[in-house]
Length: 366
Figure 1: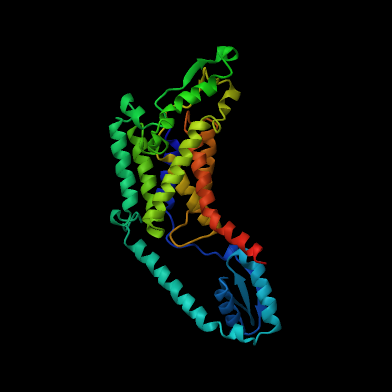
Figure 2: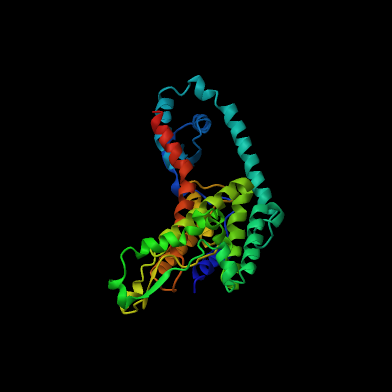
């Protein structure tokens, strides 16, 4: 049951697929102006584009409307519109046509690049070819090798060489909880961190390559190939490598230090009590945290900064969020929920960071 989240993630990716180009953004656009003259409208849209404010012209009866694509740009666009309305013949507006054409030409080249990448994918599945995503393939190969090395977790000696810790947690019956030394959690944590503290730093990353059974491995690798492959095509191999290392380390650290934070055990309300208490972190592994980070990044891009090839349908986002909550309340048994949530959060943060930084910079320059 520990791979239920991965099952749904793969189903979402299989059924919905990621969209190669953004869907129509009309429902997210904002109108800022109405003009009677088509030429003046084009002059205004050209100037807005040179100010990095994408806009479109929408004909309506005997007039035309100007709509802004990004809501964050509405305030600046409104100021420019007020200035244009007062001085429509200003040379800075009339001189924007040529640079705007160059910008549109550049955008067309970018769109063709994305279209080429998509056409080079498999015709039915729409997934990048292996030759286009070397880092993604390397991650899959390492995961398979590491998982076979630990024999899907059955080889304890090999498992403990690559796990976050080489020490097991302490398991005590619930009945004697009140008699346990209050310093026990700290003592167990110190013991479990000895391997890392003595220089075995690979342990903070290598758990992402460890999988405990065949289905766990196959589903995670499918999700990784789909999500990671898309991002590697549209960012770069180095960008993806840094992303995987950062999100993998972060999700592993969170899972180790806060193993029970997102295990709400809602089923206990119905009398299903856990018979034992686990002090410390159980051995964990899997690419799930990284996959959730990739999913979070694509979700942020889809909702706030759509780009060609970096879109996930909203219905898939809703399904995944509902499923994550069900996992956290214990419907599907023991799952490394902290790693999933941590991966999702850091993926979202990386996805929205450029937009937030841009907004802060604009406010500081006012």
